[in-house]
Image (cartoon, rainbow, N blue to C red; front, top):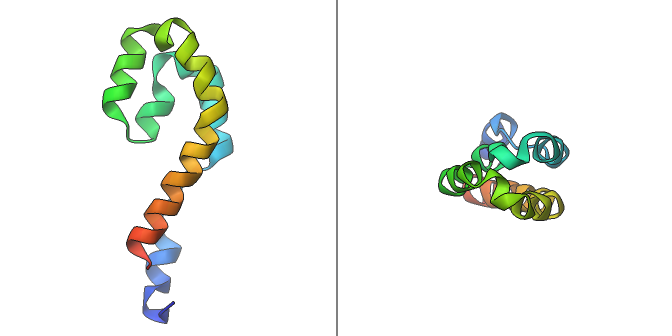
Length: 81
């Protein structure tokens, strides 16, 4: 990696998967976890259906950490490489 990209790397704001999991467990049925990941449309849908009547919220408990890591990796690839 070129050293001129180091300031960009240090200034990037990556999301913590553990924090997103805690938020998903506590207020996931309101779609807050989806809003934080930048998925506004799905956040609104989850909010209006109370977490997909609970089922969608439970599924998100198991997938939110993987989605957060993938989003962080994509952000790194976009800006650094």
